[in-house]
Length: 433
Image 1: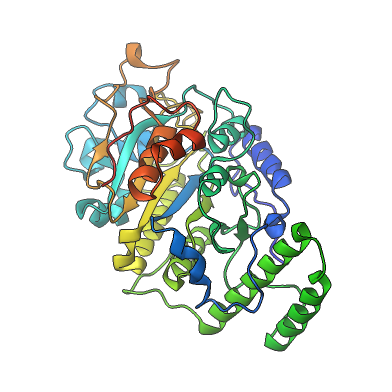
Image 2: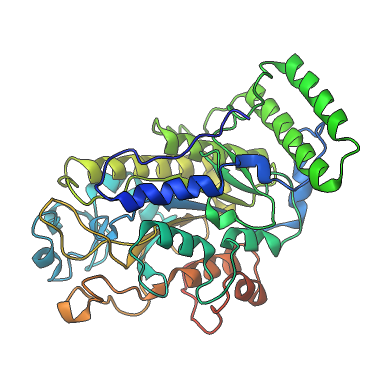
């Protein structure tokens, strides 16, 4: 395949751990689509692929990983907390510059303003003070632990792999990493996954037109015709996926409802996710990465700089995704995750260091939007309330995912207890209908 390239950080952050984490992740899943084990005949057309989706009637779950540790305190800003500006003397954002969220505690960074209409309409909301059961401030181990999501156990599979393992086998497009040639560690395990940089770029090297694709298809089918299932099944799955994406490429794609995605990897990946959802190929879980959030220095001001530019791109991409899908958002649940939040006190370099409590953005036709959700009261930024200088996490991210899986994706209590061992007895947040 021609899409296997490592993911690297796009801006120096002075944090070698971040680069090591990504290099390790590249090593773990460098094979890209080679891990496929779902079988679909290579001659299957995309209009027929939806047969596998019939068994699943829940939402498509889209997980956007904000790699590097996004500073949620700079995005949904707790300016109603009197200690916020006392701690953030270099990068703190005055309340007068924020967009109103109809909440006396919080305001929205103006660079994220593209999503404000989605928030106001109830299509988007936030959950603040989210985190793992124990703080982990190492990029590599925090990413790995978050994507394994089984603290205190010997499980080595990823949580998305376990989600798929509780379902009926679907199409080759059932679980996907989009925008990267390798799947994240959340997919590690025996279940099938497909990783692709893009729909249009997903092809065999040397198969430059329909004639060459047919020749490759014929030869490879003959090659694997008598092979053992463990070899032939993934090969046929790859060929089936290639046949489908070739037809999608020939048809082309124009986003609906005037949606305009920002140029760049994030916009392109979310556009492909929307495209796959609307084509009905059997997509159930999609993962997308958007990195470069490790802002130890030179975060910038509220009007310009690193955080401003990142939030501008993120907001434009989310707004375009929701606009493009239109009424199809009623069958989509979208969540962000980041490996950790940032310390409450800023540093002398105009940035913030690794912390704990994080911010999650939720989007979908049936999430409880237009609100900043908390588990109980805001834990406050008073020095006595902090955990080693960090915002306390009052909502376990596994409980949040469990709520989404149960409310929107048809999972049972037994399912989520298996997917997230130890989650039983932890109250699930009321974030979705």
